[in-house]
Image 1: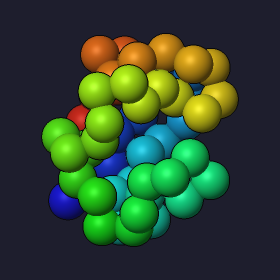
Image 2 (image 1 turned 90 degrees about the vertical axis):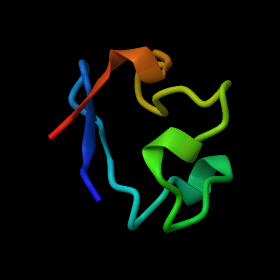
Image 3 (image 1 turned 30 degrees about the horizontal axis):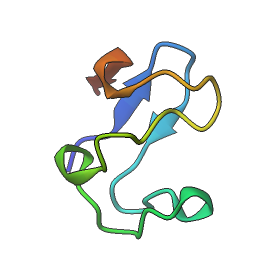
Image 4 (image 1 turned 90 degrees about the horizontal axis):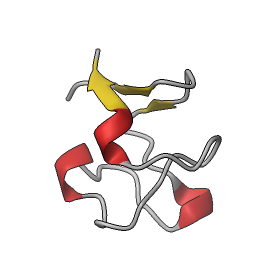
Length: 51
């Protein structure tokens, strides 16, 4: 799985998920809830690019 990077520099790693915000490890970026935002800057998924 690719790692997705926000414009602010935060990296979403699907293997790790985002447990602090209710996203379990193994959750693909495409499967993140529609209202999920970057935990650092608050931007939505449209501001991420695959690395």
